Image 1 (tube, rainbow, N blue to C red):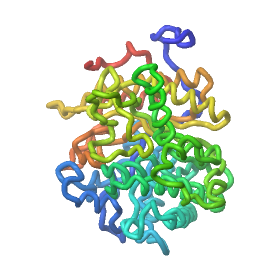
Image 2 (image 1 turned 45 degrees about the horizontal axis):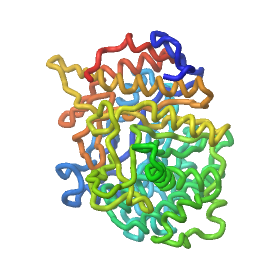
Image 3 (image 1 turned 120 degrees about the vertical axis):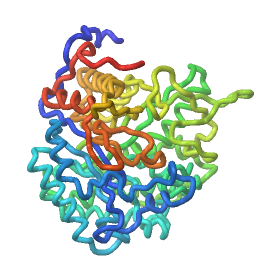
Length: 485
């Protein structure tokens, strides 16, 4: 604890007026209706049908059936006191081939969803891309192919034209690091490719797609619309203070963080990133004018945080598993930093095996606040998976999740108090859902879903979070349910 955080922990933490209290989801994880009303396969539909890629071969074909149950789900959000809801649009539901005219039935679903949210007093926060590239675009080359960035801008214009009168907050991409490096580097996410150069090309074209989409959104949206991007920035820490461990942190920071922050906010790729990856590519896929197109003014920056990253150099004789928390693969998702070893940080663990360390969120917010003063921040994802059990009376008690969220909100509040301009917090996730390569094995939701019956049951964390959202203040730790350790 620092001197600035020395006030008694029994005191409640008040958040600024207008602070957004929300929850987040993604289209493929919740919607289902995978082949209805003109929707065609995305890369995740294909990946799920590739043997051995997803837990027990599970798919998002039905997921939690949000496509048919969204009105009930919005009523549930209102009951929980949410003031904002972050959702993503399925590209292949709106534009099945990734090019050409839109399918109006697909757009009608999102029109109806946003109308329900607005009627309930909930601010819609729309993400254009949460990993579900139309399969036809992947067949044509995917994100390593420049044309995909151009198609993305066209798709952004279609969605903005349809929903610009309803949605005040827009996000271009969610976690492009995962799209590029888990999708095209380690292959543990769709489309499952293991090509380091393709991963770097994908990173650039995701950056370019973001910039072109911002331009398209600005042209189509009302002047007061807010435009952002959500990045899963890595709070990397060295195992020791040794120079080679500090060098490992620099490498991870380059390909994990500054590969996005540099082009999007500074207008250039970091020189050390280019040098780290020079043996793989000369970056000639970056064309004149690209960086100007990428670096467009944003109204806020979305921050997704779950756990810090502890790294070191690999030393002779070390037998260090290189598990970085993103799934097992013989291929690295860190081009230019393949010789970095990943370690398990100390402390408690979630069901994902991720260390619980809210200080990483505080440090990340303070870094961004210092590096980009004047740019508001939103916590667009934060949460935890735990082994939630249903009691005989049907209730779901999850004190560990409450403790996790409380600690991280405390870190956000401390950052705000220390000068960070944080405008909102979105819990991941609204409800249990399809958790990508983990299928339905991991539960992040504050609402339990019985996947057989689709019955939704708010967990104790949902009731706790509802009280926080309604009051705008974080209760002291001694006013919480007890949690196992």
